[in-house]
Amino acid sequence: MDGTNEKRPIVIRRVKKVSGGGHHGGAWKVAYADFVTAMMAFFMLLWLISSPDDEMKQGLADYFSPADPGPQEAVGAAQAAAGSSSAGNSRNAQSSDNSESGVPSMEAATAGASRGGTASVPDASLRVLAQELLVELDNSRSEQDASDHVQVQPNEDTIRINLMDSSKRAMFKSGTAQLNPYAKSLLNRISRKVAKSGVGVAIEGHTDGRGGMSEANWRLSGDRAQAARNAMVQAGVPADRFQQIIAMAGSRPVYPDQPDRPENRRITIVLKASGSALPPDTTFTF
Image (cartoon, rainbow, N blue to C red):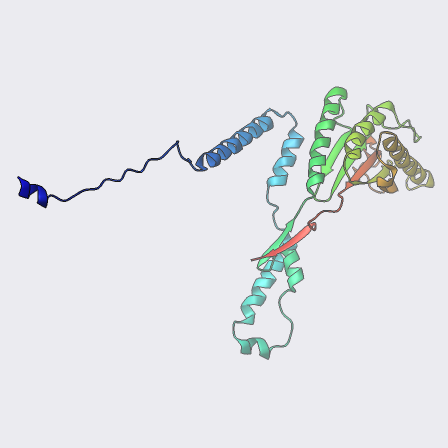
């Protein structure tokens, strides 16, 4: 028995004790962030489905839809492709022909024909302001049946707000530059949002085609644009934010084939984006 014990190997067990539960890593943070993102998308979907404003839905759909290339862009792309294929890949082919071919890089980038393209970068503050104005004016429409009077047209660098006459209601007293109470109410709503932003403001005055391009129409359209400016200043918009007051008379009717329609009599408020960190047209290559 003593000999057997001497030949048995000696086994040493080392037990590592861990105090506490230890660190579980950050995987739960990723899962939680995905959950929050999914919930935000879900509530945005519910908001879009419950929104009764078809114009707002169409505006959001147009914003997120990629724009189709125009015919000039397609022609430019075809010319650039033809120029690159005919140039060849050898140095001899490039040095033997000194004539210019293809499209300059800046023009190709603008037309989307080079290796890369362009991207219109909308001003973020202007986009937020457009949504706030749509909500604010949508409430006004529901309260006072203003669907035929107010039109908001946002794009990359401006927002155009048309306050138009209709067969039922006018913005000004006939033949004068005196605002009606309803027009003042609309301008007050717009001014509350504009005063909080840093956008520049231009106002256009338009008349209908009655009287043609007479001096009276030019003077009336300018006086009405000035009256709208005064109302916005009184509502809180700083006077130095106004960049242009323009008299348009009947030169740009909404309905060119029907120059006497009341919708051609309107005030157009143009909100211009303030300076952005990015240029409005950003060229990229890859």
